[in-house]
Length: 301
Image 1 (cartoon, rainbow, N blue to C red):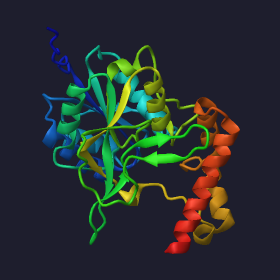
Image 2 (image 1 turned 90 degrees about the vertical axis):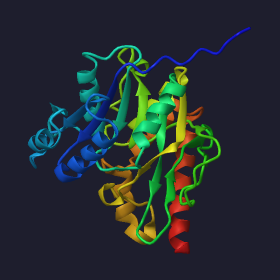
Image 3 (image 1 turned 180 degrees about the vertical axis):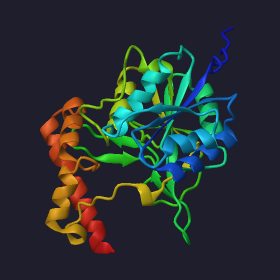
Image 4 (image 1 turned 30 degrees about the vertical axis):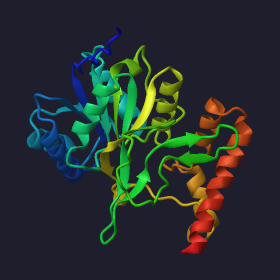
């Protein structure tokens, strides 16, 4: 009679937080991390990308056990993450996990513990938290809960549509093609041999999507954990729009060309070339869908 073996226990936990000039927000986030994962439970790695606001000093004072890895101001998100992974690689071994998170998020009370529980159940998976928006006077609503791309026509089928009132799904693990890097847990094996986020093609946005797409192609499962929730800080999220009524032609052009825009066409083309069956068709469809959806949404408001 065959028996199902228990998953191997997680060996070491590294919490990796890239940051730049968000001293006070970061310190508040660190307090929430340590409330769930004390020093003996996880190594906390803060990568300071050349902050000028005293971030490193504040982190050391607020959280003595945190390891501050200095970077420089030329680093965008992806290079900062890779800098931290290089630091972690000195001691990381098989069975370790990396919790990658943004410095500006608001953690649900047990978000990190639930992610660790999810990783223990699915040790060969990259797993992300549900991204939720909770505005004053409104109910919590889904911002991101994973989904699947049609790699021909670029149509995206979300597991739970953005803007839907948030309720935990009946099924804990929701299969997805990609994740957002606000909060996710990654087995160290996914970084070997030498696999990192692509800072050349995706210096700021889309690197998290690219990495998780690639991990799935390499045989790792990719899930959203319906039990783990992170709240999006809309005030610190870069704001670009493809709505002509909102920002005009110049604003749309800026959204397509700005280095730190999620709509940047160069990054969109790099993604299409890497994954789409017919890259030009996928690229054209994806941007047409974005333009139509954003302008229709504006017209209805």
